[in-house]
Length: 414
Image (cartoon, rainbow, N blue to C red):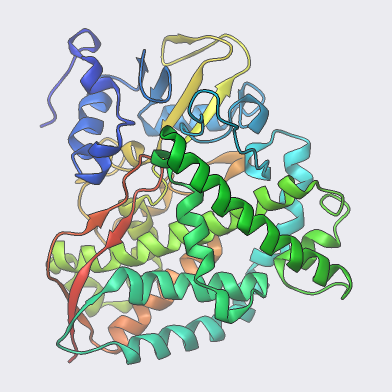
């Protein structure tokens, strides 16, 4: 039974769940449970990122997400993550993106890229995704140690991103590299690392500007860059707005799928009895995929800024307050998901997870992520792959990406 906490018993150490060491050392789940059991909403008066409200529970996150005219995502008001403030006196890098916009601007720009993720597009991409997945899995060493994150998770997601952007294949590993730099909150705190981050991101600016200029001369094509060039909503974007939307698509496509693909190995090792259910009944794969995304929750939070005084869960949030919705907490809420810390491929309500967000900002690429993960499950089962973790994973050192740097494994077949 969960311990009942009172808000008055909470200390700053309990309240500040943004500390990167909690995520790197994976001490975060008990912290989330402490806050969630104490109540759905809590105010943290100080942190490396300033004061913020934490929204811990499924119902309250849905409430906040359902009020986009009160809780703003706008980059001009702080954006969608808790991080982003540079060291004092240093220039802030601003890459506006449609997920960090409010209506009506958000609506038009999202509509531009949405055709790349329709059911018909998923049908068109299915065979190529399966081919790449099968080829890669067949190339893995048997009975030898290797890093699943690098050889499988990063490579498969990078190949998918390169296909979506029609990105030069030989340079495709730049995409996860840029994604890691863009989400490195730790680099923002230090002047030297902040400037290095600046330099790397502007190398990305130069690269993608060249692709924009080349595609502009070629006319309409099915890649995401050409879609933006030829849409009335996005063709006149500023350079930084163009780059912002590319960062959004890169981070979304990289981190969600990449970290869930590593999660697939984690659940095979931690819950062998549950994995056996999947092996015995492959028809569970679509549901097991949703459950994997719930269990992993690859992006741990999203942030909003209150535009007016409002009340949530009996707490008054003031205009200008930062509001952080902890998706990982909601997806581990026992009142919503029984035995929530356990991955269960037959969980009846797995699709109620909030890992893709809710409302107008729900992840535009959700179908593609589910397709890639479902195919990975199918191809692993077809090969009777047993992937044994050789050590605990090395984890990402920030509170936004709930993910992995390395997972050393050994694979057996049959």
